[in-house]
Length: 362
Ligand SMILES: [Zn+2]
Image (cartoon, rainbow, N blue to C red):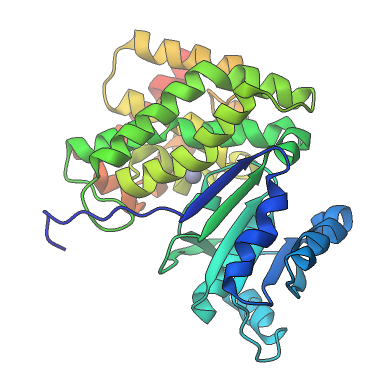
């Protein structure tokens, strides 16, 4: 692609607030009379009748499918087959990450639009066009891309406030990195998931995302602990789902997310949630960029105040050995985002950065 071309991508609509779910019927109704709803089984148990009522009040006849398990091509094929040849006007994903990705996968296959309705805020995938595809052994095999960004993202903050705080905490970790990853892309020759140089718009949004999180995320976590919506929660959810998603899709990813390639295979740490991986990855990125100790120490203190991981041990890897750290570094260098850094980096450099963080956070 021409280095002068820029592409900005974003959902058509983003709707957030207490009881935002009530908007689903109106939004879905513009796509024909029978949407397909793909939701986690426990979500359908808890609020299936509410979802159905909202859609029926908009004079829609939804086809509702429960989804569990991994996002594989076979699972997407099975969803398609369950529709008996009918092509719905839109796929609506409701739940945690998997149902949303299943709806995206089906939408890509059928060439229809998708509406995402996250019931937790553990990452920014609801806003993005990316679909993480896995094999039967739970190993990610590719990140597929929708042709069009989600048509709408509907975030009901009553649901986010009622969910366990660990999910929002992870979402904050996933969002914190975006400023640093996008800045690194811009400083070098990095590209965004749309294949163009970072847009200034993406850089500005990623920066605002970080500032909102520094200001509001601690209070937001407290309000989720109480099960209450607050202004801090509203600000933080917007940063975690909207700004973070727009920030990386239009600003690019670099080292923090590359490190997850190693962490998903690492002893113990592989079981930690994505956002905790990324939060730790922020520290390693700052170390690899050669930032002063004071800056790292400040970020470590911020992480601690939110209970975000600062060491491999906190990610679940008890007493990491030198060879294990070297292995994480090796796997990290296989990540395509790594070449978005403005400097060349070797596995030894990554291992040195990890060791620096381990030392400063000890
Ligand atoms: Zn992420």
